[in-house]
Image 1: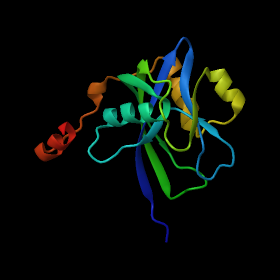
Image 2: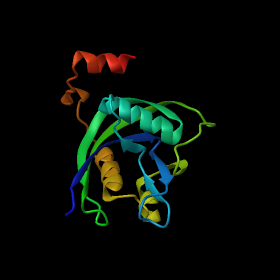
Image 3: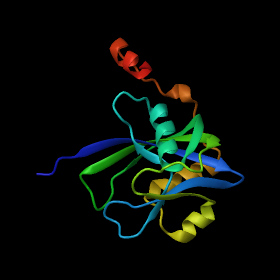
Image 4: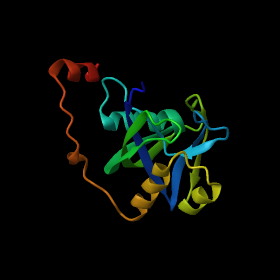
Length: 161
């Protein structure tokens, strides 16, 4: 019996001068590297926005400010039908970069590319990577107030610690 496993993830779309910030990374079940937005799982005690900021820093060395919610996306990889990823994707801007940052395990490098360059590589980690760029280019954006995250007082105090 297969147990279905949902995963809550975040990603950031960071644009500068018509190019977008990607990570080249190793991915489970794939023999070559792939390109993805800075992205990852939400950890215990984090809000979605905190997770997006943390993942972007850990994977690229860029400190970002979140501007808007780009969209909420779902994906079930064909090679892992028991997993569904719920991806909260944010529009962000880089406010600082540490060029000497040690990047997360599995990350090869951070790279700036436009949509055409990404498509030419044919190495997007999932269809969500390209879809997010297309949505950003179309001007899609939603206010951050769309997200409400209720936390109990003890939970909130853990975030402040």
